[in-house]
Length: 590
Image (cartoon, rainbow, N blue to C red; front, top):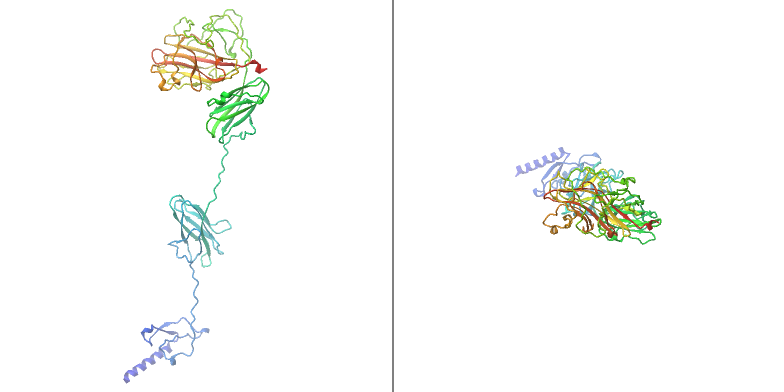
């Protein structure tokens, strides 16, 4: 027992000595469960105020007599301010933000990049922006939207505003989640803060100005547009229901033609102070309208042009007003035809009057000679008196006065240009030729010449024209040179040409070879009169004359054709100087 007591006292003395030798060390009590006298010695960070000796922490098992006299209360160091915002860490795994939400964020720690995601509805518009930047803070913003090829980026909202701003519309389709990345272009630290906001908005509709597709003469409803005689204006029918109003000044007794080309139109002309209108042109369903106007005194003429089809900026037409020269009373030099009928050359080609009693004709060289035969003008069909060509066999010059106040109703009468005449679309169509010509440089070839293969084909040309109801006479004149390898016949009667018939009405037997000139309705291609049909071999140019006065006051179409049935011989002809002279009452010019 004495030995044990001695050892215990020695251990306690050693412990006390140890505490005296290590003044800079403190004793930290261990887990109380280990025993009331056990303690753990650790370095102490705390010292006495004033830089004195370090404070010592006594374990609960030490005696009071062993406690140093100098004691002090331990004061822990202050807790540092947290650097990260409430949404960190989000550099690798983005945090979330909702539309209409604003979040307070900081750029801390160094190199911090805030990644955020947001759910967006398809087809909706959104704004993503930073605001309320603390001094020294500068943001940059990148938004990646699924369906938009490139990321949306913004650094400074304005040159003097360091915040960032992006807006966009999500593509149509399913809803998407877009990614927001906010980086700092300035310093980092807890004092460098900003606010991040996502806002859905209704975009202001972009008003695209509607282009003005009206023509340059609009508006013309209240004040009609003036057109100068001899000029053409380019109009259209826009907007819907557009009616164009134009006027021109007409001189007393002068004849004017007003016409349109382009889209389907109806045209009415109203001389101011008179009730003269072209009702037929207003009601006639034709693409190109044409009106002839003549007034007894100087007067302005109002024109009203309506669309008979659709409306739009591309529904265009040209309006032309031109003066038609009236033919003065000429002195004619008669020239006998093959049949002995006096005929008249065009004004520009008429020779000077001659008193030679004997008229000598010099035939033009026939490019395709045929056997000489005696041609007797013996027509086999009876035509109305107005259609029967004069066949009086006389060479006595009988000047025929031509009424004044006349004009030419056809265009390109000598085939010197490619305008006005329409050629049929057939296996062997008509064509312009310079091989022969009655006047000028060109004529029209119809039919199949000997050098070409013999096939079944019509070969035609046609032109439409309008005859005023006030016309006193309408006269058709033309020159042709007919050829055929078939037996000749002065006049024959055939069915209407298959060119204008539906397939169900075309005869199974081909139409025989024929030369023909026919008057047609231009709207229905109904045959109004077969002026001449037959097969003839002419030795030179021959002129034909027909009276078309019975068809005044309407639109007409003159049709020439040389038909081949592809059997036997070939039939062809040359055509030139086709004129239709329309004469008006002389009183209109007074």
